Length: 111
Image (cartoon, rainbow, N blue to C red; front, side, top):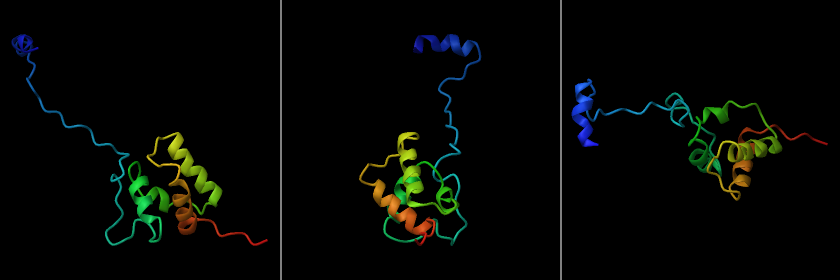
């Protein structure tokens, strides 16, 4: 490889140019809430939501959803696991679903 270096330099190539990787606009820290505002509602399971969900998207994605039922939150978490490869184990799904339903769920319908 180094034997090719003089030939590359003769054609104007710069050796060992450092290239900064492009910023991923979909990274969990791409969107940050204004200072002083909570990113998620406090409660049991909030830490797990922050640790798992924010690996792929902003927490605003959760907090701006319309009120969803437990079944809809479960389907959403399972979709993130199956389709998008979220690093959520099967035993974490009920914890996430319980928190999301309690914090951001639709009010239970009375019979």
